[in-house]
Each structure stands twice: as structure tokens, then as C-alpha cells.
Image (cartoon, rainbow, N blue to C red; front, side, top):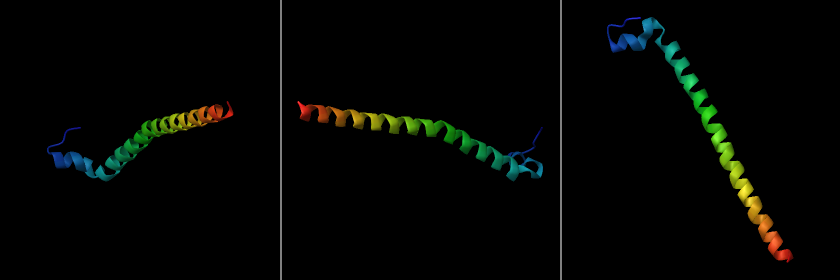
Length: 63
């Protein structure tokens, strides 16, 4: 498809709001799918580090 100007490209022949809303929604979903596992991994690692410190303290008090 050929556009004479950048504003025509953004308007997409009158379908611009729909097209750009779909692109924005897809970008948000993809971003969530990338960031969510990274945040879960970070939380898991911090919980495991906290558990390990707690177990080491408990083992030191028992001896």
C-alpha cells in the first residue's frame, strides 16, 4: 500500500485508530509475556536466598 504522506500512513485510510490500537495492545501483551517471567524468577531467587539464610541461622543455633 502506498501513502502520499505520513499523516495518511497514520490514518490508514480511515482505519488508523483500530490498526494502531491493535498494535498497541499486542505490544502490551508481548511486553507482559516477557517481563512477567523475569519478575517471577527474581522473586523466586530472593525467596530461596531468604530461606537458605534462615536455614543456616537455624543450623548455627542448634550446634
